[in-house]
Length: 200
Image (tube, rainbow, N blue to C red; front, side):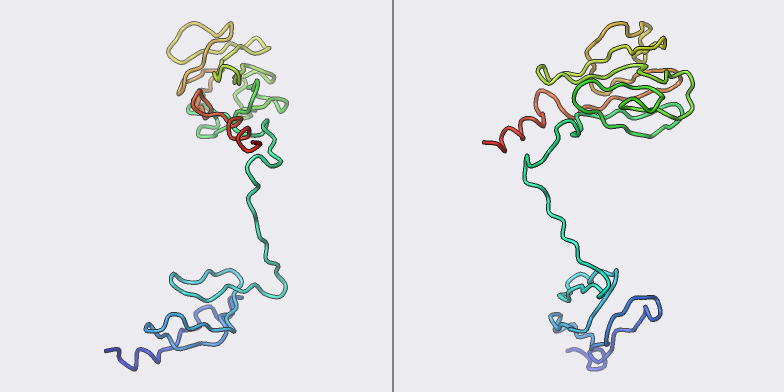
């Protein structure tokens, strides 16, 4: 049996003066959670779990509805990620960079796809190295850049002088920085597959 004193308790106005207007107080009745307070208004708080009260924006705010685009609609394939590189050693450690279709130039300056601007002066301003994704073969390649700086796969003494296949989780040494390569696209997945399906 519910104690009458419990059902007559009101919700305290804990946000008084904070810019949040909970409206009038109503009995906190655990036996009837569907009771709706039509005057309830809030700016930023969300209704509690199980509550059926609607969140109503203030008059000076607008409700914005975001709708996900239909599959394949207005999608620029060049902007979709095919993989990432993450700095695991050196300046900027922990920073991740998206790789896109085609050739991704990696260097220190602003004119490359992956700009490692973390004061590692041993990295070329231009393309120190490149990572390319081949859509036909669905493979990644590591290639030398345009400058004089060399690129190494960690643990291997030979520099990258010609394009070589790039395996998942390979660590790439350029200057005093180490990048770990994390692919998304592969022989099992490519964004083009889902785009082609959406056009059928």
